[in-house]
Length: 300
Ligand SMILES: Nc1ncnc2c1ncn2[C@@H]1O[C@H](COP(=O)(O)OP(=O)(O)OP(=O)(O)O)[C@@H](O)[C@H]1O
Image (cartoon, rainbow, N blue to C red; front, top):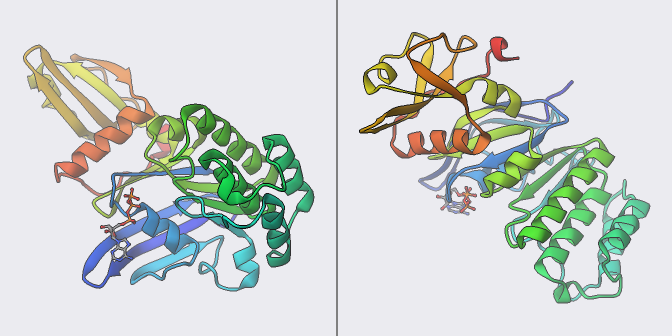
């Protein structure tokens, strides 16, 4: 099946300012992809490139097998919700659905009305009078009713309180399942990403630090705890990602390239997604990043 997103040496500069560099990605369809990274890492840039709002200055990007926004048919296959969930303040909820129907050939009015009713939005209410969570829900509804093959969302739940955020993420998953679509969303909230995403892309310093299916990435990394001298002498094929020393001993999050870590003089524990992401971000911050690891067959 055609990958949902392919990037080869993709880069973007604004004048002399580099926003994204050397980005290689190959993401299968059907995934909910979490894009994480610190402020200024290049997340919005990658999302804007993916929906064709901006053009690359280097390399190639393909979305659903074609150049982003290549033609009206391709535009219809991608739903985009930009940062700050833009809606038209003077238009009512019903106006948004009418506008969506007029602009999108594949508009699913029944899906839109069903979602609006279930969320409890008053169709007559002006969008400018909605809460942040309701606006996010309206923007998601308009994007989903296009029946896209890919939903792209830039920090969709950033302004929401924890309860609204939880409801929004449930709704997002339900919409993606109902549509049989893929989703690509950026977020600073690692627990949210851990909850809804099954594919991860970590960006830092304008580069991809880590990418892959979450299940493979978690299987390919562990935390080891032991004496400093042992943790510093790792077997071949075991790459330290983040090492911390204390008077009582040392811990290291490591990537085992060749399957399970061989037995050694250390304790081995599984890592969760949050610890994994923070380990790669810390490494990038310390300026010791290496080429992006790919999940090995041994972990599948
Ligand atoms: N239109 C622009 N003109 C010039 N520089 C830009 C422009 N848009 C983004 N940048 C720069 O490109 C880099 C990446 O920005 P981007 O918005 O993609 O980061 P981000 O990861 O989405 O950040 P945040 O988490 O803060 O939203 C930043 O250094 C930013 O200042």
